[in-house]
Length: 205
Picture 1 (cartoon, rainbow, N blue to C red):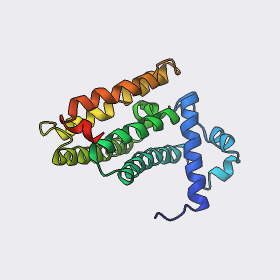
Picture 2: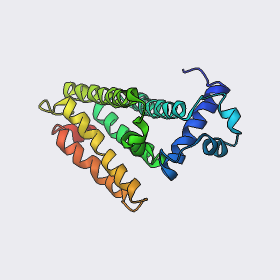
Picture 3: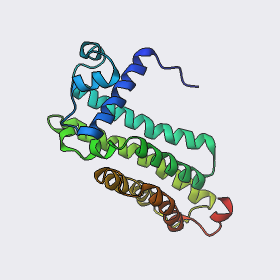
Picture 4: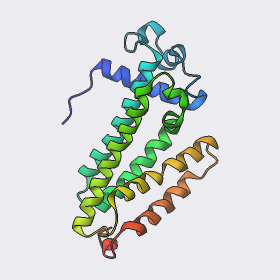
């Protein structure tokens, strides 16, 4: 069982979440320490006790995204040991995460995140790669237990999994909610499952 978070860690996560929500409202360029502090309900000087700059807050936002992605992986592995079920649950968690944090595509794709921070692009690539590796591991396990076809290429199938949500999340974000994410969620998993599942997998699900 993980150790409980200290008040400092809780406040840092609260600040990162507030920044993520503000990015959704006004973009990365519109983010400021003053606005973050106001949203959290503290004075800017108190925020500076946790983060030395706006760049440090953006780094914390990336940490928050990585933590939630990998936390979703850990949750589905606790819920079931069946790989195809794990993928289905992860898709649900992944979709919910984007529904609750609409600014994630802006963080990933905005040049403003990377300006003056050459290492940050590599950091984002590392976060995505680590998440894809976890998905690949589930797919490999599914090939081994027979629920996923042997001819499925794990790396390709993992990228396809990520593609179920990211483009749709971008459309939802730029349309300000006019894209029907709920309808997409209902059909996207079925299409993906048909593309990778072995004939007998329906009995598992």
